[in-house]
Image (tube, rainbow, N blue to C red; front, side, top):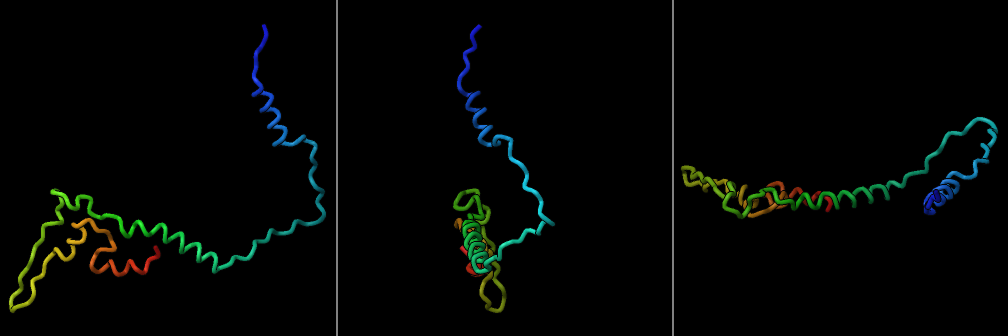
Length: 123
């Protein structure tokens, strides 16, 4: 029976010979004790620049990530607020100051106290 083979076997054999070499390579003779490997000097400015720019790309989406998945919907439980009216003519204190930005679909950067601190983060 005649075998009909494609050239894939031949191509694989040629590729193996090219990658592995002919097998006649010899190890270099050792001429004394082996020297320790040395590392190149790190440029601190370049390393910090790369770190901060990479960190900026990673942190920027987190700052604007929508924290309340039900914002602007009928199921949003943060759109309800409670207000306390203190005695002696003081201004009323309510929860909508804190929950309002989240109920509107905002992220960490939109929160009243924490939002200003996110400006310190890169991105």
